Length: 228
Length: 327
Image (cartoon, rainbow over all chains, first blue to last red; front, side, top):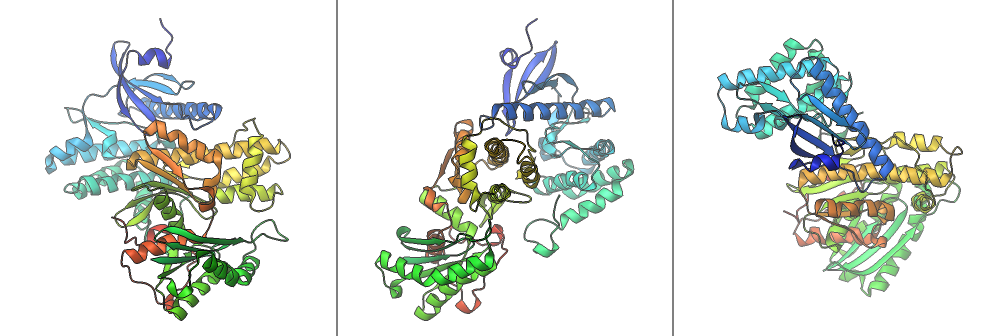
């Protein structure tokens, strides 16, 4: 078998997306449809520093996903990881990005179970002291049975800090308000209800989420909270 | 239109005179600390006060213009050191009230931002403002220059100057650190902190200071710059992808740093954007950048301020300022 180097793999892979940090490719891996996520080398960083940073981030991302998966949470399973070259390969999730799904689907009977399911998943993630870090509707996939999968743990961190967990809720709230205006309130209320019922420190996080709402720009300096 | 700008945020007192954005005079005097290694605000203000009238006269002579012929007077309103800001403001208030010339208060950071966008002829740039007072990733949107990422603690100029001071290098230490770094080659691992589009530098400062005496100073300087700048470019790259801008202007005192600029230059090919900075002298604090913004205010028909109300603001965020000349 050929060595699993990035050069070898890219020959069989189809480019699908470029983000700020990494490129995504589609390929077959051991007969399964898979996604390769490659944190490309950054030419502006000293090579030794760059390799270290990319390697560490791959390890962290993969570690978090494996941990969540082992707890039975719906995240893609990891097939292969190579911190030395800054990439890993994971299962491809079939379905539709929740952001797009919500623009074409509305009505309480559809929204409620999705919001509830997402609330339960996020509660379980927080229960593991993991914060997603980029919890938007673009990072959730819904399949044709209505089952959700959370993706992109590139900005995730392991922490028990309430304020970090509250930041997850805040980002989701802001995304709902700005992109899913019509259903935002209903969706977020159902989400929070499920989150509160599933996570024992939810009260604390929710209280902090309310504090975050009073932060931000154009609020008098004296009243602003300083983030650490 | 002839515009005068007065600048005295920190170490520099400057008077710039322009005619329709063409520089006629750019006079500046820089305070150098005598006893200490850093700026002593009261001493700096004393320096500015003694030299202000001379700077004004010199600028008028160089520009070959009489004070009555000015159409706009602008001054640096903040953010900065209170005692210093008051000197430039006093001078501007005097000219405005005695000669009846419209007066505009100018945010110092917006001076840096606009001198770069105007002189580089960039229409809608992402601006990286790096100085002793700012480390911000800025873009224009909805009537204001908005901050999309910034330092969560100390600025990059602060980081370099404070490190230099601890290493016994006198103010301004940043340029000296850059020179020393050129002779360094060994990378020492340091804390690399980035959170979203923001950078965090205080841990890096503490750590690099703790290495003094244990490693070659050149290597510490090299590693300090490498770590701090890489994190900043990475944060900027994230913001760039989010905002989808096509031009990047680097501005402010630290923009003079060639190592930092060369790192930002690498984004050109990576994201197909234009990266540039103005000539070095316009990256340092100067009166010209203040005059540029004064001109933009006046040209857009924005109402001037009554000299009696033209107070300085030691703390003022960039997004607080309405920008009437862009859309």
